[in-house]
Amino acid sequence: MDLETPTWHLFTDNLAHPEKPIREELLHYFDDRPDTTAEHAGKIIDALEAYGPEAYAYQHLCYRIPLDAASGNRLLALLNDWTEPSAQDSRARYLTWIVESIGADAEFAATLANIEETYPALSHVQILPSRVRFREAVVERLAVTSLPETEAWERFEALVRKMVDCTEFPGAEVSAASRLLRHLVRIGDRDVLIRTAEAWLEPGVADGSGGEGDWKTGLGVYLAEHLQARQFVPRLLALFGEDWDWMNESIQSALVAMNHRDACADIAAEWADLPDHGRLYAARAFAALHFPDFADFYIEAMDGETEWEPVRNDFAVALAHLATEDSLERALDFYDEDPDDPEREQIVSVLHAHYTLRDIAHPARQRIREHAEERQQQDDSIMRMIGASEPPVKVPPKPGRNDPCPCGSGKKYKKCCLR
Image (cartoon, rainbow, N blue to C red; front, top):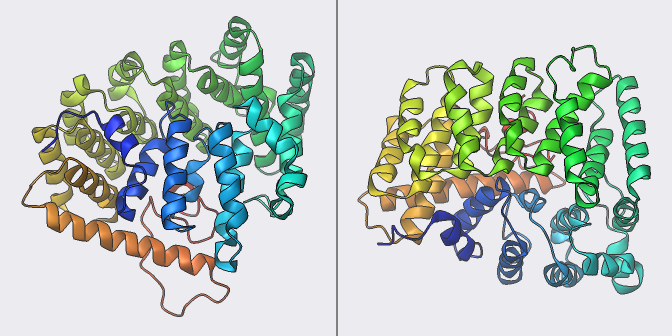
């Protein structure tokens, strides 16, 4: 039994594990963390080489894991070999991962600049969900990474003005603005960027009118995330008072990106005063970062939660990731309160991963394994139905919050049609 290896190291070493439920859970784990590296990308590609296009169901979770030249070129060569029709959707998603990684490695950018000559068959594949040709998306992203600072700010301001005029949520403009902010964080003066974020996040800037102040406040959350500047945590928590779904999700990502014990201490200190939805989003930071000295807080918050079952689930996940005998037992107790509750499906996968990778001879180990495998079969059934031209007559069970959304967006159900 291994209770000594930290979860981050244990999961890093096993991203290409032979069991799909374990691979899937580990991919979920690293999607939420800001400390992923090209090492993690390399292990994901190891799994793709070993198990094929369906090695992972939640392929979009790779998008925030950085690719360097070695891992990116390995992935391109692999995708070039996936010529069977059944692999086309997976190929499109992994090409999207490549596009999302542009800017992280100059050597890899040079490869992508010559993609038409190197991998002509890939150039015409449409990435998801935009359906833009891979070559066109590469050209557009590479252009952003070469922008001088002044021009990048000009483009950003133009995007904000465009957002103000939109009658629907401007998803494409928000994504483009975020890419520009990431680029500015790479090339700009950090002190200037911090002062900019402070101005955008100043209380009262957002007034709910849909004007520039609202959009810059929301994008200020993105900027705080890209900067990983912990001093913004109190203001981020205060922004839950705006209760704007897009911004709530952005705040959650930013809190995790801080990756700092003191950031979690700030959240714990404000916990009792957070609105209901604020606790829902902030709990994810504890599940992702799971600092050991907050174990008592996890238990107190989980026991005291009366409004949101997913909050209790996130704290159970945090306890499981601490990987002590007591914390794992407490996480199992939470699951056993109501094992048929779909909100508790994630804890099954987490426990299965820890029991297996740590070789814990627990009486519940086989039961948890069977439940995890059953859940994986349901996930695979949903993904096959999404990809089929003629969906089967038999309808799979209603998806849980963390399942792939049946609409085919590639997002988790809770972040898509469940809303």
